[in-house]
Amino acid sequence: MPKPLKNSSPSNPVTRSDPRRSSYSGWSPDALYQSDGYRVLIRFGSSLGKSGQADAAHSHFQKLAESTVRRFGADHPAALTIRLHLAQWRGHAGDAAGAAAAFEELLADRLRNLGPDHPDTLTTRGTLAAMRGEAGDEAGAVEAYAQLLVARPQLLGDQHSHTLTAWGSLAHWQGEAGDPAGAAEAFADLLNHMIQIFGEDHPHLQIVRHNLAYGRGKKDGDTAVGLSTDC
Image (tube, rainbow, N blue to C red; front, side, top):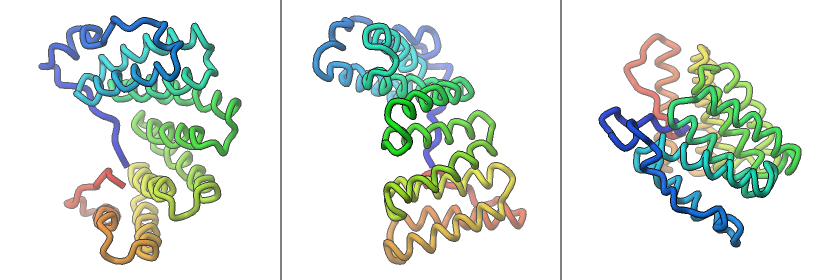
């Protein structure tokens, strides 16, 4: 399961001294009113974050969200998308608790506007579950992923990559929540399920086998093998 990006090193003068210097401040709100113009600004903000400037990306999306909500309202599709990115980069910038709270609000709005079965609603639920864990609420992450693992197979099937990712994430957070036996059992069930789908030699199985070994080792008090977060 992917982890939120860590904040950039304090030695990075752009990120730590004044993140606004890295954010392109020359865009006009009128760009949002053009067809899909906001997507260009989303890509720009994401590029900032992926280059290691999480604080600058958060600042960029904060400005973009304020402009979009002011013009279109908080429930507009563009506003919902930008609010998702804002919450993500808030977490990446080090405020996991604040990001989790923002995802809670976004999820409520998406449930109201899109319903529980919309792909964007499911994506928000998954990201919220991960952010709860990152904020220190491992039990909350387990509960959220368990609920998501009921919804995703019903809507996407039990072989879909999003279903398998939720399964692996549930196992991961079970271990983090102090249930290594439950984590090992979940990873074992996931491995057997993926073997039936992909066969014995699929590259993705290496990650699950590694995590299963870690879960069993942690259950037995041996943590020499590190957990991979790619599943």
